[in-house]
Picture (cartoon, rainbow, N blue to C red):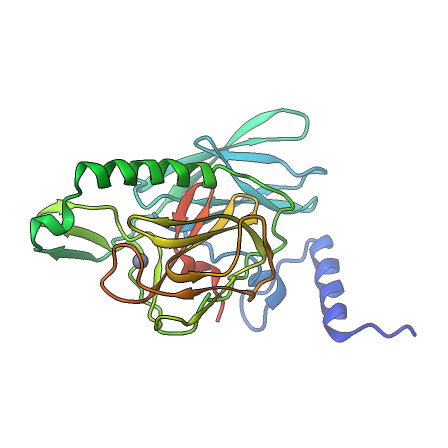
Length: 287
Ligand code: ZN
């Protein structure tokens, strides 16, 4: 048998083209395998910059601030994926790249401005002001989240093509700036998906469950480590069906939608974290 399956043949042709230094056509039908594998490049606050690092025999290591970056590609050309914080100022930015021989260089890029919608709300003060006990609890939970996000595990993901964890209407409220009684709050750092209590929640990408808990704001929550500093956070769950250490395949059921934590009704909040930064989950879904 010398026949090669069509998809395999396409893949081999794609690899051959990459080795030959071919540039993918920008018009017409480009190679879907190559394009849909990584998040859409969007060098704005809350987006992901894809920075070409050039060829090298060994995968370089890269950092943004002190957070290690996911570097993907092959010896023909490496690319650093940089999650940009919602709080980042537009303008010049840079990462640090270390080659296998230990030599370091800086790679500069530009963060373009993006204006997110603002929501001004007047509410009864006691609904937004936390008691000292609740505030202390929230601070403890935030520290725990930072620890979860500090992991940089291998194997690295071979693609970041995610699937929405539940069907349903996806809000475009990522980055929404919320002002309660004239006071700015944290902007909305994930995607809300409308779904009824009990709807099955599925893993957006393969990974390992690294934290579960019942948190003040986020309610019942599951964190999935996809490798390379990429995480999904699924919040306000009514039920959690997995435990820390469980390995999940993409699409595997793990929990049910609910209204736990500080919410007004049942929905799923899905957060995606890259180099300890919350970025827009919509960039990882390719329709
Ligand atoms: Zn939300």
